[in-house]
Image (cartoon, rainbow, N blue to C red):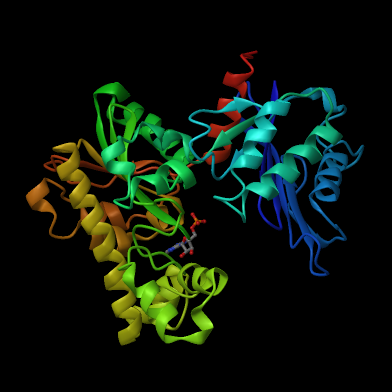
Length: 403
Ligand code: AMP
C-alpha cells in the first residue's frame, strides 16, 4: 500500500510518498514560489539523488500535475500507475471547531472546510486548492484531511476560552485551537514506546520548537492545554512571531501610529517582524542567534534569554496543570538540534524534578534519545518529529486499509 502525503502552503506544495508496508519514504520533494518567476522544484527518490530546477507553475493545480506526472515518469519516476497510490493524506492547518478528527474528503467536507477559510486565511484556501488539484489528477483515489488542530480538541473549555464577551465565541468561534497537533500525536506515541508505559497512563510536556513553537500538556494521551491559541501567534517567542504580549499594545499602536490602522500591517508586525528577529535585529534563525551570542552581541543575548524564559514559564505552568510530569519532550528544528536551548530551558528546574545530563545533551544525534540524569524524576527525551508519517498512518486508518 502506498500513501501520498501532501502539504499545500499559500505558495508551495510539499509531498512525501510512503510505502506503508515498511513505512519508508520512497519519494519526496517540494515546489515553492508557485505563480512567481523564481518558482523551483526540488525532489528526491530512493532511486534518484536530490535535484533542483526552475519551473513555470501558475497555480496549485499545475504544481500537483507536475509532481504526479514525474512520479509516473518512465525514467525518473517511482510508480508505474496512479492506481499504486491507495490514499492521499492532506495536512490541514486549521479545522476550527468543525473537525475534531481526520476525515475522508467528501463534497460536504469540502464545503465545511470552506467555512474555516476566515480563521486561517493564509493556509486553508491553499489546502482547498491542493485537494481539488489532487482530485483532478487522481480521480477515484480517496483523500483524507488530517488537521493540525484536531489533537487539541480534548482541551477543556476553561482552558480554551478567552475571557471576552461570550458571543464572540458563539458568533466568531474565537477560542484557543492549538497547532502542531500531528507532531504532538506522533511524539506522544513514541514517548510511550520509549518509556515502556501505556500512553493512557502518562503525563507529558512537549516542546515543539521550530520556526513556529508551542508547548503542550498531555494527560493520558489527551491534550489538556497548549501554548498556541486562536492562531499560531500566541504562546512562546518564535523566530519572527512575538508570542504572548499585552493585547492592549495593539490598541495603543492603532491609537498612536497612522501606519498601524489595518489588520494586515498589525499581523505582519506581530507574525513576521517580531520574535527573535525583531528583538535581536539580526536573524530569526537559532543557528545565527547562537553564533552571535558567543560573539557577545547584547540584543541577541536578550532575544535568546527571552525565548528561553518564555518556554520555561510554559513548561513550569504545565507541570502544575498536570500535577507532575513523567517526561519533557523536545522536538522540531530547535528542539532536536539545539543543545544550548535545551540546556538553558532545563536549567534550575530541579525543583520540578527536571534534571538534564549536560554531557548527554551535547551529543549530536538524529536518533530518539534520553538526555536526563539517571536521578531525574521527569525524563527528558529528544524525539525527532515525523508529521508526514503520522498523516500517512492516519490516512490509512481512515480508509480502513491495513494491507
Ligand atoms: P523547523 O520549523 O522545525 O524546521 O525548525 C526550523 C528552525 O530550527 C530554524 O529556524 C533553526 O533556527 C532551527 N535549527 C535547525 N537546525 C539547528 C541547529 N543545528 N541548531 C540550532 N537551531 C537549529
